[in-house]
Length: 212
Length: 212
DNA sequence: GTAAACAGACCGACTGGTCGGTATGAATCT
DNA sequence: AGATTCATACCGACCAGTCGGTCTGTTTAC
Image (cartoon, rainbow over the protein chains, first blue to last red):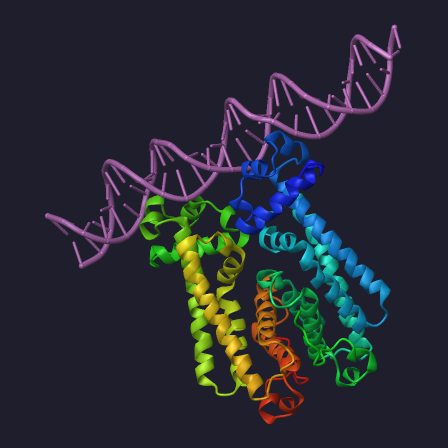
């Protein structure tokens, strides 16, 4: 804790405090003292406590959105695109757990301008997923009796909820969890025909060991 | 808003305000004025703002837990038990949406004693679900390659997340959504053998219309 | 009549944000 | 090269408003 520039240090400590006590459970003074700086230092780097909250949100959603787009561009079938997106998202928990917690717990408190910007990116992410599902349905890979919108919300819910229970030192690695998620998803979304394709098999759980 | 006893009126308005602005975005004065009472009236019914938050949590989790137990007792196969639980839970959104939002958004701010009590019931709920899944696995109805714990968290995540997007005046009724959830769940959890059983079919989506 | 239910003025701790000031180092002048 | 100017990063005492909670009444119910 020396050469890192102040801004990062502030964000880091704020993140940990927010994760534990929530945005409103943490005062600027606490952040300041715990990151070894001052009120001046804080307000030199951020216009307000709100802006800090926004900053945290933005770092996370921007990163995730970019990863999802990469996955979409780098793969060419709906199934592999979906699996890649889920995998990339789930893996983020290792790195960004505090960000994610703050993102889903405290977004209510984002004010006007900030709120709009974040929501826009959030929607882009959702729409990307909907596109993948729709394209999969058109190609006959995903079952069409399930509305794409609901599927997507179900998927997002399942994956996002991980922030409530995932522990880095738990019995399963985040990669194993991602694998399970993909297995569950494919079973619930795929048509029978698609289920038997060669490509799909690699994403399913065989009886391989999951534990570390 | 006349003969209802004050406590309910306070809870009702608090709930709506909390849902919109979050627990910390609402002051006791706001609650008091919007529910047409006074500080005295409020603190006569609640020891503190914290206690109000606890009260809201407790009403909801107690209700849901009871419903889940009823479902578990009234049905006798894991599949029907699971579906009944999901259905009962999902239906609660029509009635308790604000409660649920507060429950998942603000539980960070429950203090000591209150926190413990709520967590206990939350765990009971989770354990009930784990039991259902385990029993289903033992009977060969649910696939055993998926760890029960993870399945349960995935289920809970999928269902709970509904509070983030469900709108009463949306295109789908909550019953339809519950049906979709059950369909997705069964497809992802059931063994092939169980999938073909007569009983299961009634829980799946046929090509029946979902919209209102 | 008396006890519970409610009203509302008031308190005081806390918190986000400000503001005058300093320290450091790069750019400019002579 | 050395002196001067200026911009940037950071400090910390202080302030003004806010908000949960209290206290002293007054009203209502039985």
